[in-house]
Amino acid sequence: MKNWYYFIFGLIGVFSAITHTMDGLTTELPALSSSNIEYIRQAIFAFNYHIVAADHLGVGIALIVMAFQKNMAIIKSAAWVIMAILFARAVVSLITVFSVLNDSGNAGTFWIPAVFNTIGVLLLWLGTRVSPRAAAASPP
Image (cartoon, rainbow, N blue to C red):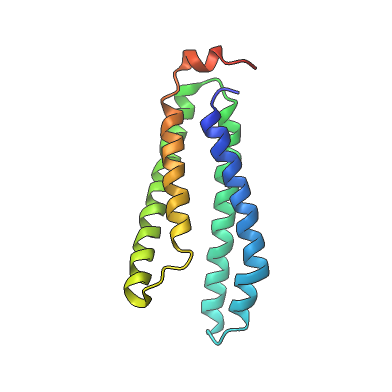
C-alpha cells in the first residue's frame, strides 16, 4: 500500500456507488415512475442517476488501484484531475442546496454530496502530500 488516503476514499467511492444504486432502485426511481412528470424528464433523471452511480464506482476503483501504484508523479497528476472533478461536483451541490433552501426552506439530503465531495477533495489533497520516501518506507 503506497497511499492510504487514496485507498480509503476509493473504498468510500465504491460504497457510495453501491448505496446510491440501492437507494435509486428501491426509493427514488420507483417514486419517479409513479409521479406525473412527463416521460422524457423521468428518463433524463434516471439517466443522470445512473451516471452518478457509475461515476462513483469508476472513481472509487481508480483510487483503489492508484493506492498501490509506485510511480507517484503520474498518480498525483491523476489525483489532481479527480480533485478538480470533485470540487466542481461540490460547487454544483452547494448551488443546488442554496437554490432548494431559497425555494422551499428545506434542503433535505441535497447537502450529502457537497459534504462527500469536500471530504474527497481533502483526502486526495492529503494523499498528494505523501512523500515518495514515506510511501516507499511503509510496510507491504
